Length: 346
Image (cartoon, rainbow, N blue to C red):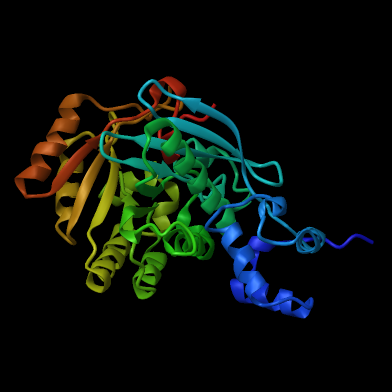
């Protein structure tokens, strides 16, 4: 009867050290293997050249490394790279490399599919299959870091959790992945270069504040009017804006970290003066900035990009009250590589 091998990256360094001691070896061997798994991002026990062949064979007999594989990679004329990432069980998620003149950003997924029901979102049309493991999130970052060095001659500088899935519904694994990304035993990246984007789950925003996380927070808002937001994102009827507001006030009180609002302006949905006034009012509750996002339509339905005039009205009204606002243009249009939930999945 075959025993199912455990993913070696699902155990801690201490457990790995204990494994070696229990098998008649020295505890420090666990440190060596742990470095290969994380800092050196090895996907094979055979790579571990400072470990004996006998030890590698023992690892092979007891463990697996459930690493990802970049199944297909598309490069855009603007330097954007979209990865179709195949997981060990055959499921596929997407990650995107987004370059600018000064930085390279990785947009990573946290779930296979999504359990939320945002009507504008292509990923929402895919049922949630499962959460990603911390190592699977970490591997996406490693792959994009390599691509950044290869194609842009510089390492990855930023990470956004804006790919497939709702990060706060895979909270523990996302936090573990970020812990390893920011650890000196991993990538050693500053948490201030990481942004987690949520559709707005108040109790989890409060939990992040209580956990004293150091990364940045973005909220996929899209309307500051409950009735309109519920039409765009039906699940949000369970999380009214007053509750979201309270959680964001709590977040800022505890962390002193500004909130970024992700906001798409759609024709005939939130491109009117009332919608603009509601957003301006909502932005006054906590220090924040607004990213107005260019939309990639996923079909010929009701969600279509609003006019430049409507977007400019948002910009002028927000700037009047001192709110920082930026327009985020879609990248990689020729390869259909918009970052995250707005992407047009074929």
